[in-house]
Length: 401
Image 1 (cartoon, rainbow, N blue to C red):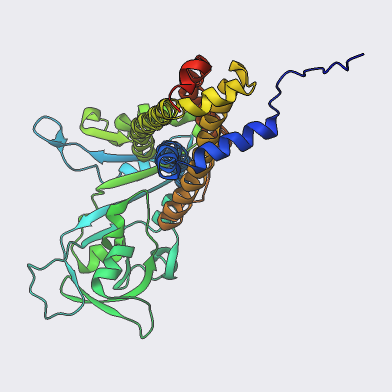
Image 2 (image 1 turned 45 degrees about the horizontal axis):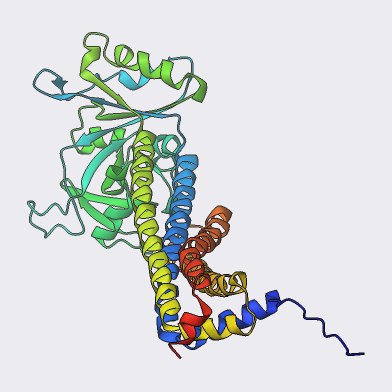
């Protein structure tokens, strides 16, 4: 009696698939590297854009929290038909009577220049203005002092001044050691304070501030405010904004301009969102190019390896096995590209955010979504070459050996 031999169907385990795919990529290293590089660039662009956008947005929200969205800024209109450019002298006190208003402060422009010494020609102003500031201006703007004190803690009727951050730098006043003096108007003023930069009002950064009494006594200040800052209850911000023009100038409310400085920051965020969308689009294009590169490599690989495919089919490999092998190579390429892209995008985000002084924030959706996008590209790019390889006839392929 003859022994019968049972033939088992050919099997391709997951481990066999990984080994076969790895061999296919290692034998074409340069081509595989360039194809994976396309995926790396696309994923890195998407992760980097989302990470930088989130980090920038976090910094912007921190600025808004610091400045507060309940700040209103009042100025007089200028130009033909919009006003004389001056606010009434008693405008700040009238604004303070509005019930929801929490703090009011103002400054006026003084016709004077400030210099480090009295030997500098008058026409060289250095871009530094002189402002007569109310004592609670720093509190209203929620600013801080880098050194010294503000005018509310100094004798404002004496010739003393507080320098904005940029003004101090241009005048060469780094600290208050030695009691520095500046030539302001036609006499020496003692510097009693240096302010930190104020995001809400860059004009103050470039100014030398003096108290209203001192400005009136020594600099012939006319007591007319140039700008009024108003802090109000956030619940009534729109109501206060609506009544401010008539309160400031009852005779000509249409000549009063009321703005909200935080609106400019929100507009900047809208512009950043548009720019982010553009960069995401470019990242998607790069990702598409990477997918096309993978598809191209796999199609060429099928054409070059017809003999290998025929031999494997002759040894018992099924069409499904051949398709799984080539699809595995495509997925391995996209996996390497996805991991490399996520790491590169995160590194770029961290480097740029640290350079800008932002907190490094990389959304989880950027990491997970970027990797899944790479795998999806791998599946799509490898599907057609895998199906084409599976359709190769063993007898026809063996003729090419």
